[in-house]
Length: 521
Image 1 (tube, rainbow, N blue to C red):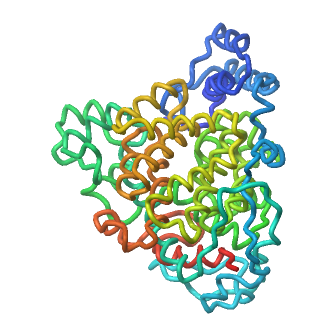
Image 2 (cartoon, rainbow, N blue to C red; image 1 turned 30 degrees about the vertical axis):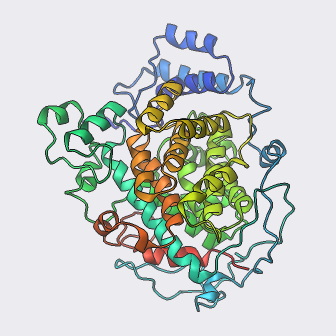
Image 3 (spheres, rainbow, N blue to C red; image 1 turned 180 degrees about the vertical axis):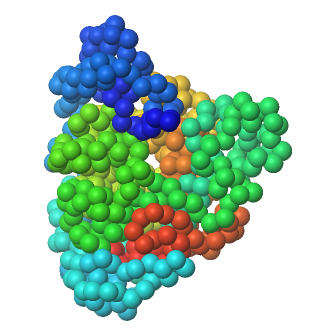
């Protein structure tokens, strides 16, 4: 019988990743690395989630001991890269102010604005049918989802007004669609090298990238050298697309809709954990999320779930969960960042958290009135940067990307520069991927097609980068009708998922559900 080799949890693999993480976050791991190497310990897999061979019992026990020793090493970056929200705010002198317009009181919600009495809603939320329609509520709860009183703020580039429900609804649908399109575009080339992506696209005349990847016309010898992503190609190449297949980049926004519906805007990190245990299949988690899930099952409480033997705590997983926090706080990037922080700290620390709050704040700004139009992507990104500690590695990476896009016309040159600068980072790490997302959006001036194609063509975590770029650029278009049909038609307004009862839901229905969790003045 072939043994099960579960990815992202094998101690001998985690140790190699943690040694690399220590080098990046200001610890000195050389003595521990020498002990591991002298014992015959393997390096971390470069791209796969697990090494092919199981290590000996001795090496596995040694790896666990060394993981704990690495956790105790002091970091020279501790002061400039905190995880606690209060310390992050103390470093961010221009942390955005909460808007001064009156917030809607708890219980008076966007749901009421759409003709659904807010008190007539189930704690289990609406049931979503296989055809993507919403069924009637089956219970009642107040939800308690209204925005709290305005908090004091210390900065902000300018205050924006949240849109009316009628204005926000089409933008939400465009954001959901954009997220799905960008994700699907990147799926067949996930895990592939930058060279492989360029060669595959060029072989079909699709470079610079402007449309879906296809296997039609690719020379067999090129496919043999650079095969498509094995799991994704059957549902994501142009000739195979039939609706939006399941992906964690869409599963987490669905979970966060449930989170807001069940626990309200003031949810806790423990609420996130409880929801995951109730609704998220363990096999649908990866990297930091899988480690945190395992930690929960062994009795470890948040936020220690993010730290215990978790070398992926600065990877991209928290970033891909940030969109709903931005979508449901239009014009209030501070609130979006605070929500994203409570979500992210279940699984991530420092720069992994910063990536999530940066994206949430950027999206909240993009969702405000006055942010439609390609020129405003630059303002949105500057707003997002206000919630990132200025001396952190992520802030430096984002600023590096912004300098490159301001100075360099050719996007391939920008990508090459980024890959050179972050060659020592894993392809799923938040720092290089966030820099690439920023470069793609700003170099494209927020144009939808250009944004998602640049994000995917830059490599690394292609489906996640495409999804985030698509969400932001889609939101900025203002309407699903503004998205080209060649991107949206193949999705057939249908999303596959294993989350709750969402399987088969349409993106128009998701926009309505998101609007219900959005306060309005």
